[in-house]
View 1 (tube, rainbow, N blue to C red):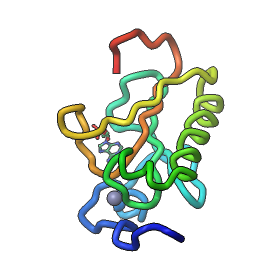
View 2: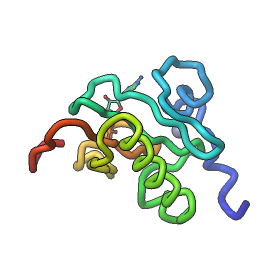
View 3: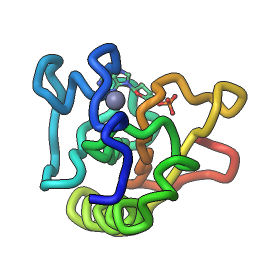
Length: 120
Ligand code: AMP
Ligand code: ZN
């Protein structure tokens, strides 16, 4: 694969540890490229995180892997259809100033009920 080997896994990364099964999570989907689990502090009736298995810091870095980025969006849509009515908000907090706290790229999928403008 044409991406950097240094980005596969970071032993100190929370989401790498969840992917490895070292920290429990409530998984709702997994495949070869991504896992999806419920956010610990849900901000909507359905709030899950779509997390590429490869360690990339944020969506800027993930954009270097366009097929993986597209797969992340596709899985987000599937999960929103499976767990809610199919409509969803997809959020990549990118950088501390935007509220990113875990520096392993993840897409928040918010769905179910009415999502007001300005809510996360
Ligand atoms: P962000 O602030 O965009 O980096 O999102 C990180 C998200 O991870 C937050 O919404 C947290 O609630 C969530 N989170 C942190 N630790 C865990 C965990 N162990 N399992 C599930 N979600 C978590
Ligand atoms: Zn990681």
